[in-house]
Image (cartoon, rainbow, N blue to C red; front, top):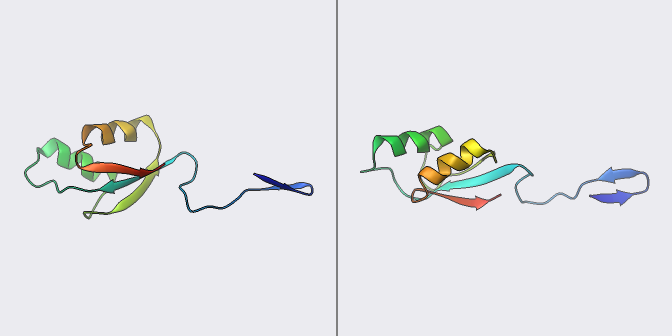
Length: 76
């Protein structure tokens, strides 16, 4: 935060907002168990190499932990 006079302003940057996590789908779900396919779809991915932003919650972290070989954390 930057203080200018009597008002508070925030610096804008290209990083993800606080409380968000960027995920990238890096490997295909071909020849993977149905359980892993559902996790990838549940995260909201539709295309390979897609980058999405999700809230940084325990549920999302747990889903990523189930498929670390398919999804990677880009930022957050």
